[in-house]
Image (cartoon, rainbow, N blue to C red; front, side, top):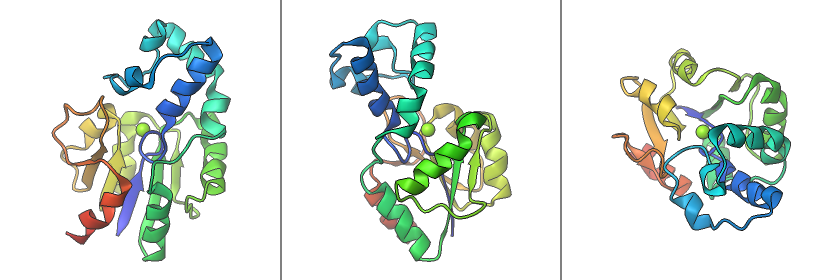
Amino acid sequence: MRFGFDIDDTLINLREHAFHLYNKKLNKDVELAAFKALTTLEIHEPFGLTAEEGTAMWNSLAEEIYYTTCPAFDGAVETLQQLVKDGHEVFYITARNAEHCERTKDWLIQNQFPVQEGHFFCGMKDGEKIRIIEDLQLDYYFDDKPAVLETLLDAPTKVYAIDNSYNRELKIPRLTSWFELKEIIAK
Ligand SMILES: [Mg+2]
């Protein structure tokens, strides 16, 4: 089968990683509970930053956020490796800006994610993911972002939301752990 994955906050714990970096940079000690309670994708609010300041903070830390020690979610790497081993196809579809595409692909490879030639798509807008998902005729696709998931409600692909505090409004099947995937595809 053909599986598609968003990267940030789907396979890797990027927002939480960035949250710790914000604390460090701002010399603050905002508790993780404030992060867990966020109902927005953006993380600036518990730091008392405006949306604009939040964007500036994210951009100023982008190198560290994207290319240092962001952890994968438990089971993500192993699950994708196993899919490939079992003969399935794994595709990555990330809306990170075009300037980050090459290095993001390298980062995935360095962190043991299986990346096959031609299976990495990057730099599109959120609303453009659906075209790639349709063209690839994916059987399954996983993402965390409401703006993306909302475009996929009628797609023939089986779409799952990666469970998070900012996407619980969506009436869509969800995945709370990568260890659940095996059961889902066995159905
Ligand atoms: Mg994401």
